[in-house]
Amino acid sequence: MAAYLDHAATSPLLPEVKRAYLENLDLIGNPSSVHSLGQSARRVVEEAREAIAAAVGAHRSEVIFTSGGTEADNLAVKGLFWHRSGQDARRTVIISAATEHHAVIEPLEWLEKEQGAEVLWCPVNPRGELDLDWIRNVLSDRAPEIAFISLMWANNEIGVLAPISEITALAAVHQIPVHSDAVAAFGHTQVNFAESGLAAMSISGHKLGAPVGIGALLVSRKTNLTEVIHGGGQERGVRSGTLSAALAVALAEACRLAVTDLEAKLEQMSGLIGYLREQVSTLVPEAIFTRGDAPAISGNAHFMFPGCAGDSLLFLLDTSNIAVSTGSACRAGVADPSHVVIATGRSEVEARSCLRVSISPQTSRAEIDQFLAALPAAYASARKAGVSGR
Image (cartoon, rainbow, N blue to C red; front, side):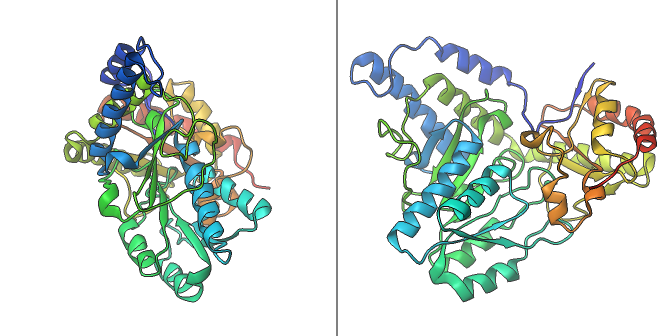
């Protein structure tokens, strides 16, 4: 039996989502067409938009469909920068953190290189927590220059939660919008867009049991973005392109399921992760739980295994039919050590020794036990191979 413990990379298609998706694949008509078939497709899309808004705590007009989290992040980062700097040429400064997903980091670096932006990277402590005093001081010193802030709600590698409401409250004093990549957070902690104070928030369907290729950017009604994709003017004019009614319905169903009985699901996942941590500390006493006691999402456990390479451990576990990861799947195959772990002050050797176990409400105790049964031998073999840094 396979033990799938890599839900942070992608989560399997949920049966209810698959059913909703297939039921709408045969819809005829472009949702932008004015004839009755097109308007029938439009109605399906708008009902999906309304369901997503209800699940995330937003108004239906604030849901902008995208192809996934990466596009949502790019639209938020570039759209906010171009609009804000276009309105006021002084506003070229962006606050973010080196622990962000590359879907945020790389657009920011591109804006810095090609568009005259200046990115200020918020420090994090060894557990991966943001330095709020640093943010407060930067806002106090440079508020007139700041275009926006982009800080993820939950880190996709080590699971640490950011105090989003505190950050938006600090920014609101200076009328600075905040974007948050909530791809890793939604469904794994309580997320409410309206209550968060955010200007924009990214989510992705395939992390929730929907198909790959659908996501959303939540954009508050008082927030303006410059469009990134030009064309037909769909999605409030900021994201052109023909909408897929079937994918919209699939995302809506996945979002609905994600928040149904959420407290019970969070408790279930927290219990499994607590059991996993306890057992790992017994089986491999040298293992380090990376984030310590920092606030975190419920379904993530990130370890450093001293003396071995995380890649070696991953491949050895894979031979036992256990799927885990060393970090972001978007960087799989890249030789560099985890940028997230490096940002917390760890060495390259430590950053190469990591393993992430990520679960969903569908994960069973048997899958965790399968991982635990295979871990000691895999760790012993990986230690023999060793780990090296550059």
